[in-house]
Each structure stands twice: as C-alpha cells, then as structure tokens.
Image (cartoon, rainbow, N blue to C red):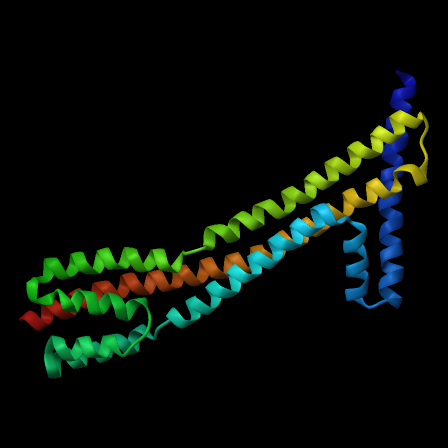
Length: 241
C-alpha cells in the first residue's frame, strides 16, 4: 500500500514538473521561433487522433459563425428610416405604395411589414396575426445553425479532456507494467494529455466569442422586429381612420 501511494505521489510530482518544464520550453521556443511554427509543432506532438477532431470542430464552427455573421449583418435594417418611409407611403399612396417600399428593402423587418400590409385589407386583426406568424418564421431564420455552433463549443473541450484522461491512463499503465517511475517512459503520454486539453479549450474560447456576438446580434434584430411590428399596427390603425 505504501509503495502504491509513493508511486502515485511521485507520478503527480512528475506531472507537475513536466508541466512546468513544458511551459518553460514553450517560452524559450516562442522567443526564437515564430508563433505559428510553435503552434504547428505542438499540434503534431499532440497526436492526430484527438487533435484532428478538435481542429475539425474549429473549422466547422468558424464556418457556421462566419455564415451567420454575414447573414445577420445583411439582415440588419435601419428600422427608423424604414418606418418613416412606410408611414409616408401610406399617407401619400396607400397600402400598395407602402408594400412597394417594403419590396425594395432587405431584411426581416421589411418582410414582416410586407406581410402585415398584405393582410391590411382583411382588417387589423388579420394583419396583426400575419405579423406575429411571419415574425416567428423570421426568428427561426435568424437562429438557423446557431445550435451547431454551441455543439462545437461543448464538444471541443470534452474531446480535449478525453485525450487527457486517455493519456494519463496510458501513462499509469506503463508505470504499472514496468514497476518503476521513469520520466522517459511516460513523458510522451503526459504531453499528449496536456496538449489535447489546451487545444480543446482554445477552440472553445474562440468559438464562444463568436457565439456571444451572434446571440447579441440576433437579440438586437428581434427587438427591432417587435418594436416595428407594434409601430406597423399603429400606422395601419391610423390609416384606417
């Protein structure tokens, strides 16, 4: 029992020492080697199995994030200007003129306006139902594929932790098989364990930043949609009078 306790304690001390030594080596390498080269070398040393999957999560996550950012930026509309144009068109040319303004404007707010104006002839209640129903459709379009981004954020560190656990298991299996603690025997397994965790966390942090930006952008557009919907019903009510 004492021998097992001593072996585990020694292994723990070695892991701590290896981590410190690795950090010192990385600092020395970073001072003399370009960062991209150091990153590439560490990625290769981490092993292709888990590191490749983590890299795939980063690539797919960035692809989804970039696609959503482009879509949301294109969907952003100057709602104040649009409301004024629709109100002026209603006053001067009626519903058809207002619909023409919406047809020539991009974004979910203009689409909601068009649906409400298209049902204006059936009464305010029908127009309001059309606005609410189409608003839900537009919200679904805004949130499309965002769940995939959150999935990659969750998977990347989990894969890193899995690589860590597997690396530590392999290290202790070698210790148990040989019967003594050798730095050269388990250094490779511990290095793989540490690197997979680091890269998994880096990927999750990068994607989390993009995710928070996308969610904030969606919330901003949804708020504009809700405010504009209320303004449209008020405009239609005033126009009926």
